[in-house]
Length: 367
Length: 199
Image (tube, rainbow over all chains, first blue to last red; front, side, top):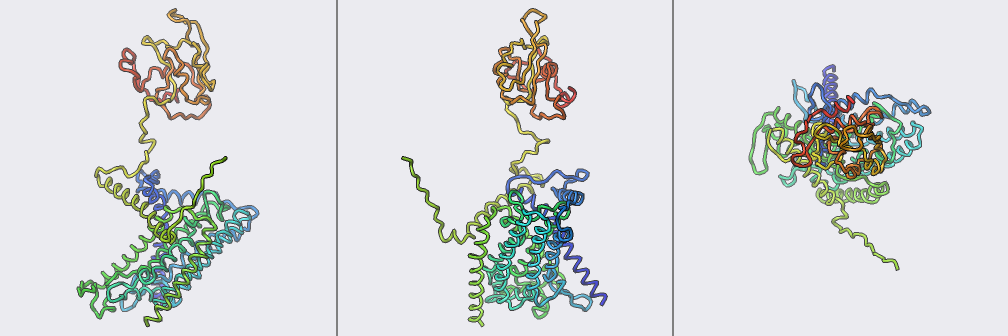
């Protein structure tokens, strides 16, 4: 009993630390990566005793600045709602990670411990449900600020997020049909199967269209460029107008954390989670742990090596997807609002529906 | 009749209309920059000589080289014997479009020239650095070749340059304009910033 709780707390600590580290690194990557892409040098001035750490100190300075900045509350705003809006923006993002497996189940002292905080049969629905809660954050922020620009920004944001949530939900139905489960843990296990014995059955291979729809829709949920109309920090004013200091920082921490979590969701559903092609643990391959290549070669590996490799593979996939989201954010210009809505409702939604229909027919024919 | 220029919208092919191929192309361009610069940065960190990974000039440490014709802060030139070259002819004051030069002429004590400037003041806050005063000067007495471009100060008074300040800068030279120009002139290399503060 106590051991179970201790294990659970340890897993929560690992995941929380992982997300926070990812968010911290992303504030740095936001500057440095964009600088590299634009032949600039990026943040390089902050230093502690002359140690600059390639600009990482700037992120620390940022956090310090946000903490010590004046916390301005709009005098006629709704205090309570104004205070909880940033929490609504951050909380759903962090809890979403709970159902994602970041490694294979490990055997420790006769116990099987899944490296997944919450083993839920309805895991994907849980992700969608908490993704839907993120709308409240921006909506409350806009409403409680008692400022018409904030309110309009909040409306804009919620319209965008609801539109793209539909795409997220519809595009996830394809993988659900293919893998026949809503539990991300089972989904990852299913992705260690092979088509015709040699093509890994990853989500991106069996559901490429769903991936191409899910990625932009998920990026629209993070409210970052090219979908950054909710903030529009440079010209159209957004929902966070009446926020300052760390309250404002929480919105953006939530955004960065969302990038990490989204990368994890995409890795889990479409990139095989922690799986490495042709790598099987002992339980999966009749007591022969290691690489079983389709041409018959066999490379034996210790069980713990397999666990380490798989956790590392998940981490690398998440890192790559974080990098990709940053790259996309700094490559494309912002959509116009009508384009944003048109892409969602008139182009992506029909495609998502077609994808579901085709997937269903193919599964019918195959089985 | 007005010329009518028919503008036709660019017809996108179906391939382009699917949107993703073109997005991919854009992503490839930025990624190429990213990886090229990343490689160069890493090469530099390992001590290799690579192409510069950025176009940035790290300003206070590095400075963009300025042309000898750069119009910076003014200076008044001295004759080899240390007297000002200026003969208070008022040409520069007349030429100045901003009316920022104020000269008070006085009779020259040594008799070689008629006049010399009792006061020669430049209000830098009005100056537009056009260089017309330099072109107008018949005596080559005023120049803007100090190469000093970090013009900053904490009060308005600091920007009101008087004769002594300008003349002291006459002793400073950043570079000669023609060969042999500096022969016989004592060249002091002084920290310009300190000089400006000390004034």
